[in-house]
Length: 625
Ligand code: ADP
Ligand code: ZN
Image 1 (spheres, rainbow, N blue to C red):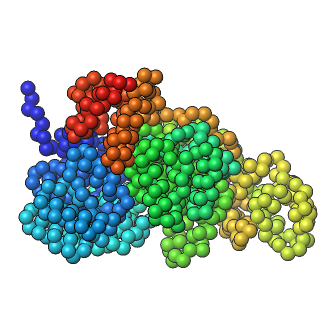
Image 2 (cartoon, protein in one colour; image 1 turned 90 degrees about the horizontal axis):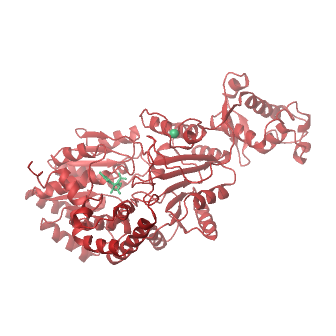
Image 3 (tube, rainbow, N blue to C red; image 1 turned 120 degrees about the horizontal axis):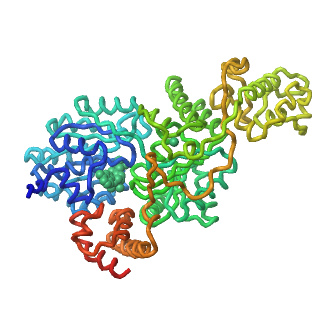
């Protein structure tokens, strides 16, 4: 018989504690490197599996007598659940942050000294306070300070989108405990932010692990804004009925209105934004994490560190600022690896708003230039008629093949040559400015432009004498939707600028080249959004079923019984249901209906502790269903 693997190798810990069969992607090499005492900088997309990169080394090193791993995280609201998830898996973990009373905090510190704690989660300001550092000193002297894990490491950078002053102090860890290994983790791929992290955390000698940023189970869809609410409702209730999701809006007001409206339409929607009471925010977040099928309508104040694995969709009603933001927000869908959808509706007003926000901002001209460039890249993605994923990954420096799992791959858009139309639109705007017959205004918005091009005799056309322009009616052959597309594209490409509160249109310098016919403009035909059930097809053409979609009737019954049982356990333990078991794990149990503990142990997500704690009950539930 071959020798059994030692109980404390990273792989055996992955099997035994987490019940998973194999490391994903870069995880294995990160874990080996850090377990052996190396420093690491880990860049992985949201949902890529960063937690295990430090949790497995923490367990391995603790078993080897090296003491505690300190995890620095800004996500105070989530520490309770993170620690709860580890305890469920039989790993002794604690947290230290401002939500604890001083007695509770003292109890944590006493336990820490006892060397039984494997992981301690702490807010950055806790870690760097002198009293705590002194305690770490004494642990360190006893050889019981094993590892520092710095989560959400981009918070140290002013270039990142989530700078935290307290993170700057974290360089003290290296200065004071030079021999203790450190692992820093982030989902931010931006080169500038990355260098900042290295500088500020003094990670020059750390090994870098850059995982693929692909999230193959997420399907990307970007539709032209028509009637945003109706589009959203169709998306949420036809395609994701009863599923958990996030709807992002730009303003607090829009968040509240949208949540209220969705609720009125029978969707379990809740609002979340920084202007709400802390209490309300906590309650809504808790319900989102703990109940099934809640739709959170939120500003981007919501989501960092939300590690709910079964978020089935992320919808954007407004354009994000850049691809980094878009990717991070959409990445919150489908962390469990099951089919999920990223959906966005986008129109001319979005382009105008984002440009205005940059122009009106107080940032330096240099910084604005960077912001404009980033917006441009996002607009190109939105206007693309080829594979969205190829473009997304290219933005992060990866080359790839058309994915087969985005709107453009699944349903290639019809395109038309809009070069001539673009010239007509631009020359019409030129004529507006030249035209002096009317009174007052020489600049007009998209509405007037399209009316004139299509030859509509409105009051406003008559008022300004625009029926006399040579461009009046020269675009009657195109629909209004097509013209809207032309204008949006011209604004997106920067050939047209919008000005003032009425968004009047003005030619940019580059318009000249378009007018001369030197630039080809190809547009997608406006079209109805794709109807019907979601296509659950991944890039390799394989089906990716959402957890329970493929179960037959009797398995569905077992799945329902298991979920009811899980809800009870979660309530008793005051934890979200997914901390007990993921949907995918329950679905596999329902599918295979194991009859023995040994068979149950083979299911992904069933570790030793959970088998011991829940195994018999699960067999009973399966037997009774
Ligand atoms: P991140 O922090 O990078 O966003 P997480 O650490 O929360 O991602 O992991 C995302 C999900 O993937 C979690 O639900 C986790 O349990 C699961 N997961 C991570 N690694 C593995 C693995 N090797 N096998 C199976 N599931 C995994
Ligand atoms: Zn594609």
